[in-house]
Length: 624
Image (cartoon, rainbow, N blue to C red; front, top):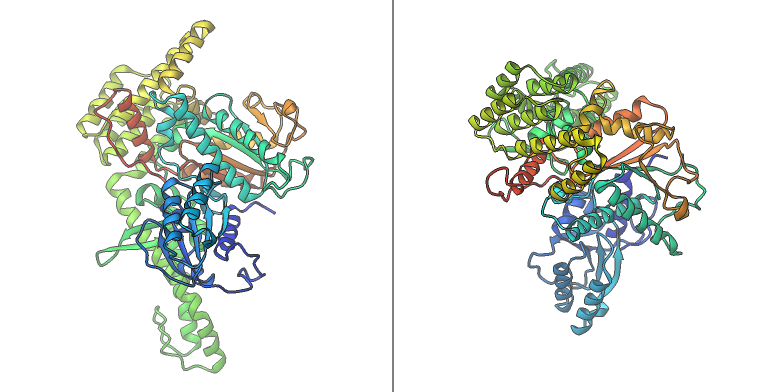
């Protein structure tokens, strides 16, 4: 059975809401207990895409509050806490217990609580004489946000900036790597699997892979470990492959415009935690939810926008025909809207009509929702020429360049400052050799549009460094010195700002990540991936570097992107499972899910840190 992260995480949360009691087949506890739920902001974001208010009611949660809000005592009722194990949260829990706000305290931490904090919790409750109030303390290993069955985010903001910051010391880098590896460990515990790990050598991917491998090895030594799968001799068809990459592996895909429905909704309308707001017909904003419960979204989110518009029209016409059919059978008029007042037909037709009412109403709501979303998108597309940017960027990547007149026309035409900046960076990444006068003309056009050019300057600097490294590669000694110096100065961002371009050009525009994952899951010798690190936490340490018995092929893969993922890559990996025979299921995750604009903002911050723009702005760079 395919791994389903959304289902697994939801099951863990429901068990937690039922005071960690075993659940009966209907998914509720045998004994219904009314309780209060307390969470912090981070855990609210974990709950938001998975659990709705009606679900909380179903599991006996009558009230729910943020931990940092002032709350009144509710006696004789247990409280379920779901929070990160931070100092401030623990202090708040101790204060709540000492004031006897609730009858009993069931503490659930989103990740493993450090021993130091556990001791502080114990001594704090002992001092206040409230230790008997704390019934249970659980490490839930749920420190990630699941957005779809096969999509998750660690919700770790600005990781790309932190990893590539020229001023970041070893200690800061180690803390980031620890945070990412811990988040991935939580995902694996929730899925209950120990994967085989592959990643490119060098840089953040190898650092995270090595630390995660060590965490899994240490954990598997304990008798009561959290992984349910059997001994170490399971075939690779049953164990998943975890592929770890760093955003610089293919920077372009995080920046380019895309014309498919899901990436477009995210990029243009700001889809966050599966929710978005669009202007309503009579002013004000309408809020919509887009998840697997919306069958239209599930079926059409990977289509190009014009195809989606046609599909909405088709669904609307089908709805009108079905309403007319019901009206005819029940003796009603032939009006398109079905209001249920004209029901005078015979009893059988009447019953059928009544039974079809809820389904027709639901279909109409879905059609209206996507009509609203498509109308809002169309407004942005026309105003900003998003279709033209998408086509030109795609052509640039295919041809390795663009005609100068076409380039300047795009930069001086429609589009926001950010659209033009993204287009200019795509020009830099896609062009094999940089024409100095052309680059100066691009910079002048960006300045004329009053765009902040820090991100453009940053990519230009890295690209020129890449070229100079390639030029000096004949002298390996000088090259290694330059690499050492460059990695110290520019973090990990040397290796692949332009590598993704060559990857992209070679195979009918398939993304580099997708093609690499396909090769890794097949497990056959391939010069492109033979140098990749191979780690098997279940194999003896000595054989892990490549002598493990688990070589593939793999049916399941987990692909993780350090520094920010996006819906374009996610869609491409889901398509992979449709068109080839080996891998049947791919889960995609990232430190955060970013729009092209959010990634460019992070590049801009790095540019400023390197003195390539104005002062560092404290911009909000959060994805989700």
